[in-house]
Each structure stands twice: as C-alpha cells, then as structure tokens.
Image 1 (cartoon, rainbow, N blue to C red):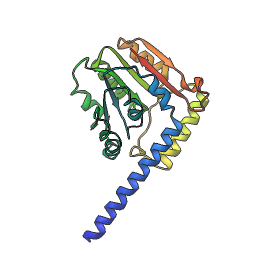
Image 2: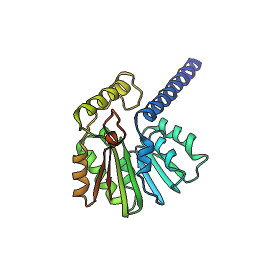
Image 3: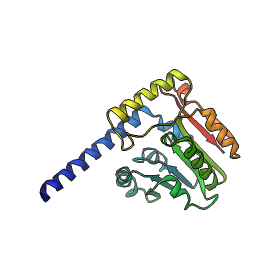
Length: 221
C-alpha cells in the first residue's frame, strides 16, 4: 500500500511538471513577453505579482538587480526557483496570496510592480484592492505595469478568450483551470489608475505587432 501511494504521488508530480512545462511553452508562444519586458523601466527593484514559472522575470534579470516574484501556486514557485534563483542571486520567489504579500511591503518601497495576465483571475472588487495596494507600495517615482487581454477590439478579445478556454479549461494546463476570469478593458484599468493618482499610458501591443490576440499594456507612473 505504501509503495503504491508513493508511485501515485510520483506520477501526479510528474504530470504536474509536464502540465506546467506545457503551459510555459504555450504562454511563450502566445504572449509577446519580450515586448512587455522592454516596457519595464531600468530600476533597482521590480515586484512581479502572479509570476508563474518566472518567464518574464528571466527576461528582466539581466538588467534589473533585484526582482521579487510572487505566486500562490507552489508547483510554479518551485519551477521558478529551480530555473532562476540558483544562477541569479538578485531573484527571490515567494509563495503567497497577492494581497497577503502586499500587506507586508512598506509604502513607496518598490520601483516597479508588474501584473502580467494576473488581475483577470480575480473578481473586480479584488482587482481594485490589488491595484490600490500595488500603488501604495510604489516608490515615488515608480511604475505600475499591467499586461492584460483587452476587451477591445471585440473580435480579437473573443478569439483570445476562446484560446484561453481551450488551454485552461479544456486541456486544464493550469492549477487555475477551474477559475472564472473577469477581463476588463484597458479603458477601465486606465480609469482605475488615474483615480489612484497615476499618469496612464496604454500600449496596444496587438496593433503594433499585428497580433491576433488582444494583448495590451497599461502603464501607470
């Protein structure tokens, strides 16, 4: 019985790693993360909330001396640590709920906060709380970068959502496959950041890159 349980656990862990590696490859193919990384200003400390396996962190590490990644998925945190922390001493990966972690961060102590395709996993009320806390911890000056799937243009958004449903709900290539998503428009996010006192710029990556997915970046400074 004990041997069987160990084998089952090992098989489950192997399946989990396969799923996470598959999701990494799909995300790298779908999301223009090189272009997202290029919009992150040179600074001393970047905090990525919902860092997953650390794909974006890996792109930022050569020019950012200190990066903290936060994710609630223990398996993804393990993958990020294995791939990043050993060779990059400035990178720290923390397993935590976003709001719980933000509550431990002092005011105005982080140069740049990144939320890349993270906010939509939360209901609108929680998104507003996360944005408020993210602005609180921003240094003055500082940058808040939101990578989102914009809800406009409608055709590109519907295509993006269809692919997302296939990857996450049908193929279940994520621990969050059961979650409902709450996408908002770049206009909505811009209004939230303006309300919180930031100057806003929207970069429609899907237009600039002629991409079929509705990728956009909302920058608040």
